[in-house]
Image 1 (cartoon, rainbow, N blue to C red):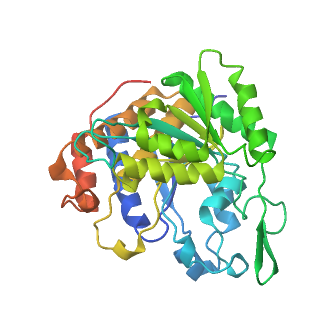
Image 2 (image 1 turned 90 degrees about the horizontal axis):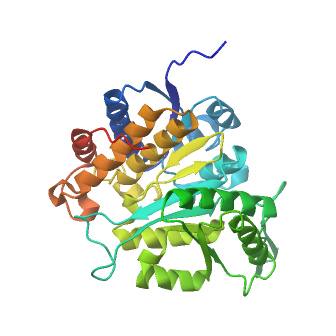
Length: 367
């Protein structure tokens, strides 16, 4: 007997700093979009970050990860990792916990310029790219060891870090990049430093090339990471899908977002074929928390990406249409400078911007 559809369940984890504010804005816009398109969505909440630390002695409980696996999607707010205690005192990296604990290996970070939003690029330059970042290994010490920590200090004056690169992880993130490029302009650029990291980045590049061979209609090229940073500034239009490892993707996505107009403009999801988690690209901005002046664009677009992932994975055209409507409404709102938030030189509050996006919502029936 086929399961009876009763709507999609989303687990909401507001997080730290401006997290609760921008998550609330995103949920409000998602609720409006799904209602307009006849999609039933329900939301349940739980604690991560500082609130969880105060209540349970840890920033991320294993029970939250277990619970998350029972939902259709997850909305994760920002985290103040720099303010957490050491891991052995409860300060778990929440994002890493989800990426490793649920194997959310693909961190997709679109970056584009918007009419009406000033960029930090030279006149005439524009950007429309996606950074496909591997998120479960690399140089990050909290996710490259089965047991223990990927950093150590043999002496008070020496620190060592370990980097983990596996063929499996490289091949599957490359697969995601080529699948995405096939829907876009059919260009994949692998970013690496194989001239210095001969084995680790060499393995990454070898894996990327092996996947590229399966997509003869997609143009594949590669760049050294330092050259890629320069090319993002000089000629960002050349990029379509950027494929890269964890640390390089983290750095390049911030650079690209800032060039496009600001860190608050880019959405992001962490995903695999079974689970998807929406997460803003930027940090928790604790200095403006609670002031209702944060820009919720990144979180709204991240929620849109999550809803699109749900729609496509469930073959639900209405959910995809609602997701596309959310993204279109954000773009239409950003085109009007009088509706900008403080970080973009405007005066709108976080809640007021969300209301403006809701007002701009309209169906965009495009798979």
